[in-house]
Image (cartoon, rainbow, N blue to C red; front, side, top):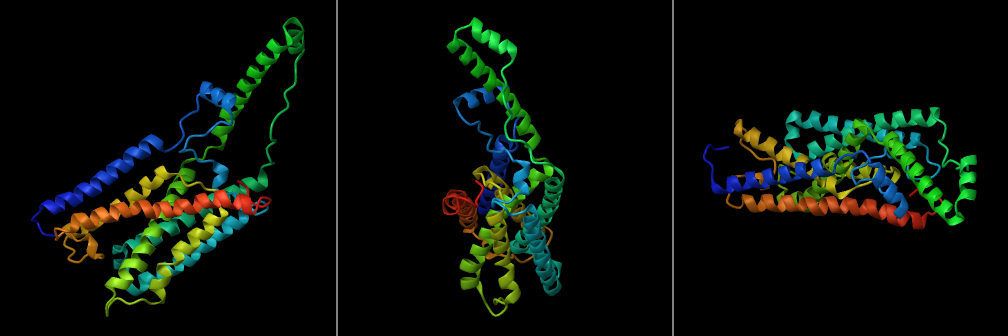
Amino acid sequence: MALDMYWYDLLCYAIVGFAAVGAIWVLLRKEGCKASDDSDVYESLVAGRPQRSVGYVCESDLWKSCWRGVSPFWLMGVRFTSCLIMLGFMSWDVYDWTTSIFAYYTEWTFSLVIAYFALGTVVSAHGCWLHVTTEPATNGKRDELSVADLEESRAEGTWTYLAKHLRRQVWVRSRHYVDDEASERAGFLGYALQAVYQTCGGAVVLTDIVFWCVILPFLSNAHFKLNLLMGCMHSLNALFILIDTSLNSLKFPWFRLSYFVLWTSAYVIFQWVMHACGQSWWPYPFLQLSTPWAPLWYSVMALLHLPCYGLFALLVRAKYALFPKLFPNAFLH
């Protein structure tokens, strides 16, 4: 990277910086689950079914399948097998091209998917242990009328008593809901798994679309041709993440697009640092800063995150919308 800095360089820095800061701001507002207030839960129970915050992650969703009768061991097996196969192809890639291959976004994404399956295997193993050792929790508890309730019902009018009794039961259930919500909330590894999963969803779509629709048709030359390894590196990531998606119970809220944005921003900043340290070539032509068209390319790539993430989010939403209708007796909504 030359020491001279031009106006279009500053625009590229501003685009990436604005995207990263905006993503952090969204995560600070949405991620995680704040402790539920008793009065809020009470009001939500009166109005209807209580709604958890959009950033809430349930621990059992991390390792249970969305299909009735499918053991958590199957999901763990899929994740473990996917991790091993992808590790094999990554090792092949590094053997052929050395560690310099990690200059490409493809290898970053491929490594992230491997990390997801490795972390998913660990979380699934813990879930399988809970599945085997923990008895199913009883659903609901009977509410019995005490002698004091009966005496109160005689002393007061029937309708007055029923109204007070209903309010009391709703309040008790709201307290149970708060306790259950706290006990079912995922820990740090659970939230990390959810974040990596959603980052993988967007990054895999971006990587494969850019490769198959832009790089391969328009940037191929004598030194860059499609081969078996290259084809597998740009297809197995999507295949395995889609298989996992078809089995898991993970949600895909929109605000975690921010992790995807931060992931790509980290890669771009890494490339800038490498060029500042003396690297002379760019792995992708549209990352070059030595052209007045650079801000346009950076803006296009930034905006491309929305449809890429949205496509995967649409697939997950379609799963939860269509599968209950197509397989009402097998799919667990």
